[in-house]
Amino acid sequence: MPSLNIVLVEPEIPQNTGNIARTCAVTGASLHLVGPMGFAPTDKKLRHAGLDYWHLLDLHLYDSLDQFLQKNSGNFFYFSTKAQQRHSDAVYPDGSWLFFGKESAGLPESLLFAHPERCVRIPMMDGTRSLNLANSAAIGIYEVLRQWDYPMLQCRGELREYDWAAAKSANPGSEYL
Image 1 (spheres, one colour):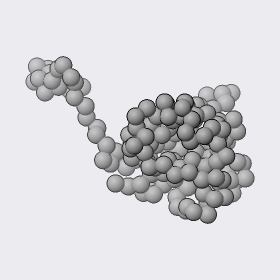
Image 2 (tube, helix red, strand yellow; image 1 turned 60 degrees about the horizontal axis):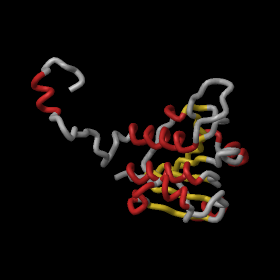
Image 3 (cartoon, one colour; image 1 turned 60 degrees about the vertical axis):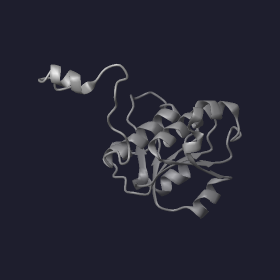
Image 4 (cartoon, helix red, strand yellow; image 1 turned 90 degrees about the horizontal axis):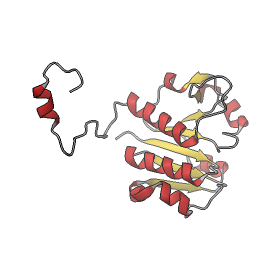
């Protein structure tokens, strides 16, 4: 499976990080938390938001952005409301790293300015501040996975009380079955 890495730089709200951890766990993405954080990795709200998915998560912790950058390199993409290109226009190769900044301020502008060709934006209405961090991460993760045709992910579901095959044979002209 291709590797996808999600990097949260100085996250402040444990519930957002817990939700992102859950999204990473169900998609196979690795999660990298860069401090200082606004909570401890053992925070009850963080653990609760991630539910029972923690054992599926590939989690890495760093004290600072400098420490992270000393240990890692690759295809970095910086998600920011300040970016000039759309997230869906970028091409994400295997080994991509998606960076998201803290809820109150985003990523450091010096980091964005140093890498303008790697900065991407999720389109939003003019005059709005930003999307929720967990929603932004999910949008980014699923755009990468869409481009990769959802490797190793289950793309079809089954009903508990009904049979899709029976519905399809009963309605052979339906485009939705």
